[in-house]
Length: 220
Length: 248
Figure (cartoon, rainbow over the protein chains, first blue to last red):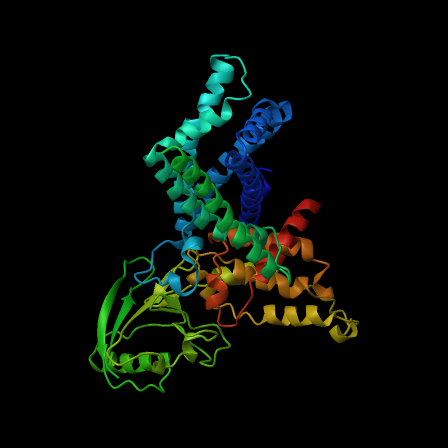
């Protein structure tokens, strides 16, 4: 692995695979979150399963954490290498003439998502770890819904969520389709696939925004 | 047509350069961009000043010599042409035009607007060839049947003139479009199969050693390429490379 990751093609391949894995995770996360709008009981049941299942906790969660850390560290490494590769910059660079804003600014949309992950971990992941492993509190399968929606009482938090998911949308609008190109998938099906990735990139973040606004409005 | 040119001037690779303004008058729409620079240079020489140095050769879009970043785009605002095929009718009276050399660490400035694109030659030398038996019993290339689609795709990849616009346009100064075109033109033909594994690995290794950036699929290279080299070539090179790496 140390050898092939030294090549620019392999770095992009690894970046794409970690991105595709995170997209799959995002879909799973959205599906569970969306149940909080439909039924608190189903949301509690699924959250309890995800929080206590051995395979999810001991095997999938470490893979997910590795995937997230790998994706953002590799993103910063690629950005530094790419800036160095230019050397002296242009006085006049008309990037809008040949490429999208999203594709040229993945590092900034990614940085916003990373900052959002900090808030998200502060809101949910750290309290969960504290509940289960630090304080060793008794398990209550019905606590998840209340613990979740209470976070969306604060307007500032809802605004931060909405802004973050807009940046996630921008990141996915380029990143999801781009990952297929990086793994070598470019053929007669690519146009259809691009349509799907663009729809996904818009619908899923809008869905997350809808969930946050739904719980905020319901608690007014 | 009356124009203001903002041109990068730099004495040599070791000195710092800067943009200098040159007002110019009497430019006709039918002049090519390089002819316009010829007019400027004649005026500069008549005034006893140093002419602006720029690369050019065939002036018909096939040699890949001309390499100017014009108003922030390689080969200027028009598509599927080189700088020598760009005409002044693409600009308006009173315009200010910025002219810079192609920028990349792997394309060091030699003088003014001339850059050293020897890094492309070294990538080509690393594996952009097929070894042919020249002992007297060489097989005619046409004796080997080639799938029509592959032949067409290979030909399209081979139309790359190595001008470097892809590197100049890319925000990462990546040479993946050039390298992938050179890999693809052989990867698609039966004659290129024997050395396919070594070829893609050697060319990618050389590309990385030259200091080009990583591809982030912005697609700027494909848009700005004067020969319309497709991003499909980069996807093909990625497949070829990962397949070659898995073979060891």
